[in-house]
Length: 564
Image (cartoon, rainbow, N blue to C red; front, top):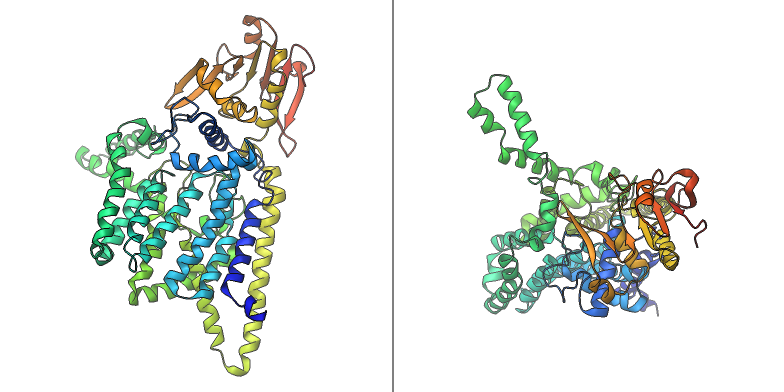
């Protein structure tokens, strides 16, 4: 019996159970609400399940789901279908598969570390670190495409390393890599750069595997040709066009302003243009963005500014990992000089921020560089392992005391750090940041659904973003019906907004002619209004919906008085 507890399988099973618990516990309540991307992914998965078409009526989209006009990549939507089928159109249905992918990511990390280090215990340690990693938990407890993309990339790297032994692992590696490029946009930058670098550093790995290269080439062409043929269409470049550095409205303005400063200082026009132009400004912004992903501020102190991607008050990694990370870097760099195999970890770290650095918003981003995991965790595990080996080499008469003290201090530091995180995540975070997760929409649209037969027209503010999708999702609006009915759709700078379908309207009450007072004057029949504070005259308000911190999210007005 004792030998059973010493087996790696037993400890791996415990780690996976822990990983599953941390990812599935209260998954419907924390984060406190589904955001607009989650409900869009869920409803499109539901639509595919019921009709074989997306919300806009397109049959089994291959390149992307148009959604809000940014075109969500297809693999994650299709991968969400089993969760919706099993649990329905609700929080668990949408978040079940992402959490499962997170657990599988822990398993893949075990095999990846084992393949790299040839050390069973070190592999278990790496898996444990990812299992409790707050960065990985934040992303895999919600329906973010980056979680599945990271799993596919990890599988791809693992199979690439194994392709030295079996030829067919190379095309499989390329298959998972290509699937990741149809899962999350950052992968479309990461994968070409990563594999190009891998090829340059180890041509023999690829060129000696002729069968693998031929079949892998076919796989690549299958995924790349559609992208090339549709390169200039919104389905391919839509998302990048919305957030890229050069498409930022102030990009050229800032160049002209900087150039003007030099001209006013009597610089020659040619020299002013040479210093301040699109290329130099792009490289400057890109460089600043890139470096920001490696700062202590981002990694250990405050993390990403986007509160859906990072827990406020915490870095992307808990502070207790700082010293092991530095030690791991040191020992891994020494090992890279002897064995180029380990360069794959540094490649993943260095390539991961490139895509995020090309964007103008939410930088540094915890989501867009999620493809860099589990490299960080592998380095931390390697640092802990080598630190422990050094401690074991202490003088025999003092070894036991040193080991016990250091182990106890490190364990208590970890438990304290992780315990504070758990309290913040499960208690403070849902209460203080429910607004950032569009909390309140569920109650608002369910109220509209419950009262739809009592009113001729129902109005819901779009101030918090994409109200129509929340209505479709939480009221389980039949996809076939929605696809067939007329809709008023407005394209605002590449972003699609549904202003009206059926008897439901989604205006901005601050737009000229769209205030509630003006609407009540020009519209006939029984009307129901759901707006933000300030939209509805206070003496008209009959009901309020609050955020979890007690602040008012929505106010409801009805000519009928009480609403259900």
